[in-house]
Image (cartoon, rainbow, N blue to C red):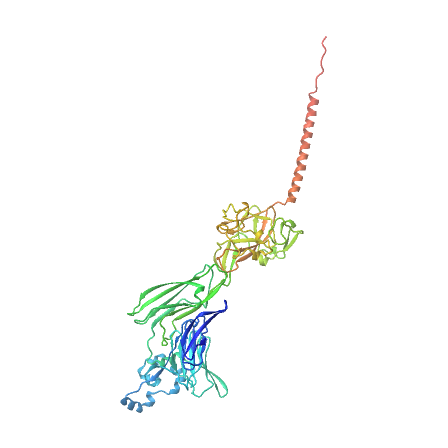
Length: 588
């Protein structure tokens, strides 16, 4: 904020990201005094500007600036006949002026509607006139509240109170002497006004009953422009994931012939997309049309990894200080991963989740069955057998699968312990210890890829850890043209999803696989969705046992052939001894 001359001022804006000044600025008139500016403690960019003798307001951080008037109640003069009557009953008809600083004197709203009590609470019916700060009673202090409340204290301890959305302020009794230089005003976190002063060396903090004092200043109080205000905002913060939607509503029943418009304001409109629908209903009061507005909120950029937030305010477009309750609801929309959102692997219903046998359990991976550098290579193998201590807390009980089966896990999305949905986006699997003795049953040609699909070997070639190599930011679909050409038709398709994709095929080996499933579909969620689980394959026959069996079968077969040959030989011998050749007889 800078001054061009003694009465003109302007707001200039600096972009801290691009580190440049915005060439456009907002000019406004001043009284020529020293300027002060302060944002209200909320996210809407509401700004109060003041000098010694004037106030201004900006609802948008300085883009537009307008005068903020304050008013004071001036007592109307009574006629001469009334003065005689007042002199006789002065004690009865006029209250003590000092009573305005007492909270109890203004706490009962009903007293303002009782004609017999008018003289007790008010010095006379007054009218509001715009107040102009004098040179000997200028603005000493300004305090701002989170709900848009503001308080102005002058050098002579005159107190003005207002609300930003109303657009003006009204003088209320401060209960302070004009020469109390120690007095100051402050709002607490609930928007309640306090007066702080020092009396006899002690700090005094006094609550100001602003509403009761306002009714005194506004007497007779004007009718509130609305009869009923309702809304569904029941959380201080709403979390919005990429595919999420928040629906809020507000209902306004206005007074007779009053506006029923409902204002919807976002502090950061670029963060969310808003759509609104309204329904109108005639109330029992003539000239009062109830408006019910529904607001649907979605992320503006669901595929971006950056998160954001915005404050959202639903309010009656017409506000007044005479209303006992403010017709507005404020909440924070945080566009990010909802706390507690995670995924789980659906387990077979027949398999137990209690497995004490795996406590303090370990197993061994043979040296030829894993890649020690976790690069997914089958032609690079470990040089030693790898012993693994099973962590049952991290992986839970293993899912038992026969080696002849294929495996595609079903992932489920949860908020805490509340099931949300079955994961429908693409996800991938990798083995935590680098095991490579499994394969995929789908190829790029089989799933009809238009380009070469991503694969673990290529992604891990530069040494990136598997947890960082394949993510929503690096994922690419092979069903979109423009990717690398598909050269090898037998390239494995290593992507899973609920409607298709690939499945794991086990080799003829029994063992435990420590698997990590992580969702890589762009735009599915702002969350890092991954889950650790284990699979134990059983029923496969080891190569070593097959060798022994083949040897045994060979020996058995050879022995059988020997026995068969011996039996045939013996049979031939026996047949020859029984049916030997006859001797020939000579003829005479």
